[in-house]
Image 1 (cartoon, rainbow, N blue to C red):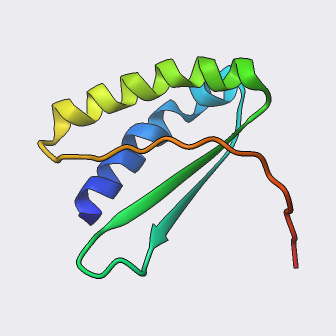
Image 2: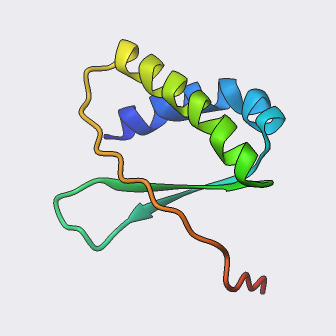
Length: 90
């Protein structure tokens, strides 16, 4: 599954200037380790405001279409929304 992660990363990296222009501020990629036998990644994005969130959704659809063209890999996308309650830098 690292192939899929690298492919997705290439697609997103090419689009980063457009995401920034649309109002995306930050992207964090996490890997879930406690699911034995599964490869699960979390992509968390931070936006300047709700308008930026909406604008970036169109870019995500474009990126997902490009991913489908390049690879025949099934993805399960589960969206979630939240706000930062605590951000501690040590």
